[in-house]
Length: 578
View (cartoon, rainbow, N blue to C red):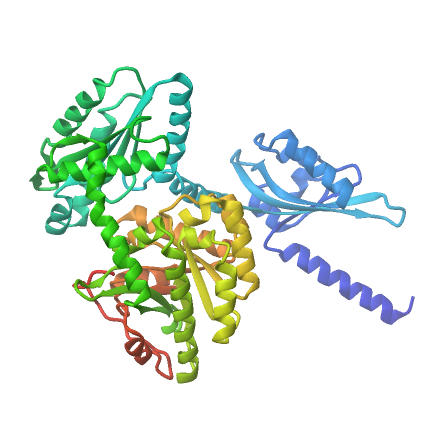
């Protein structure tokens, strides 16, 4: 061997040694008999063990006792078959603390194909697991009250309906809405409103049997499901008791006030055989209770369906609006946190009704989703947004990414891919210029279909975002499978991050988890400089809200797309997000 070759080998060995010792991940090397022969300083920092304490020992000395035998068996099979395995293991530190770690192991062979070493690198994922646990909790429980959320309610209802059908029993669905809640919330503040909801939840839990179900499904909307009913006399008796309990005075801080519930009741199987029918009909009955003066309960009856005639009329007006193009798109800026420049624009639909004026999407989108109107309406929005983006590309050197909301029905439509592809081709939209947003609920209504549809959209060059993240029911396992680029942090968590530690922790955990998964984060509903500063401090990528701009018509939104793209922040407490 020449002197030059020897020097090259020595230099390479020195590089490898430095990489081994200075790696941020713990590295452990074992011989062919699975005895530890080396470990780096990161191993000592992570486990507390010095190399001298583990030298010559089997790595099983580190086992924490929580990893299943199946996992170990899978690990050894993979190493024998593929010479590589990675996965989660639970180990025990020298201090006795048991912790999760993400481990990657490679088998090293000699020229004869025999294993001579195993090299394992691993990192402590305690913080990531804690963040995942907090997000997983959001998938099933309402963060404010601790009650089941809508997803868990529907899952439990499905089981309850199957049991009732099997046992030939009835069940009752009580839809509960608080009277005067908006007035209390507006006059006494959101903090008082939140405390009221927490107290209502506690009182409701005290009203029902252990076998019954209680959930919060909206702002001041609760649902109770009474299971295994043999005598219907129990239902009105309980409804009266709930009204009595929820009508007792509430005291929050120095404020004492009254509230009461309006309750609508539907019965399985008389008033419906599906979750949707029972919830819809109890909701109809609840509105009838409000019409009867509030603070009472009403059973659903077929005659209440007559009241839906107005809804049918509204639906017909909606179809006419689509034909006559009474809809308009407004755009709200999305700002790059670091550069304080406009990154994107979210397209938000408005209905310019000839008699009623502007009607917000919360009024007509639910009706459109329950009919076939959502498909042509959604296609119109996609085409119109792409058309506007094409105009901005011509008008400015800094065109924004434009995002469009998709409903669950649109996501599962067979025509969606063709609609998007045609719009992108017509207006020459390039990769990454169009973003489609879906809610967690839409993604989880049929996860496999969602994965397939989103993958096809991603192949078209469409960016994808999960909207209202944290309010829905996404499984982390499925979230990792979705080809998404961005999570949108819901405004309900952003609103109180200045003074609510739970909301602040949720925001931090979501941002950390998203970045861990390689995703960007947009925070919605940013209205104050303090919110902006908090989110910037915790590396939220993009911000959207009235602090920067309200939703604007295209010509006004274009004025924000200045050559330098810088947008001034402004305090805006008087405005209410649309």
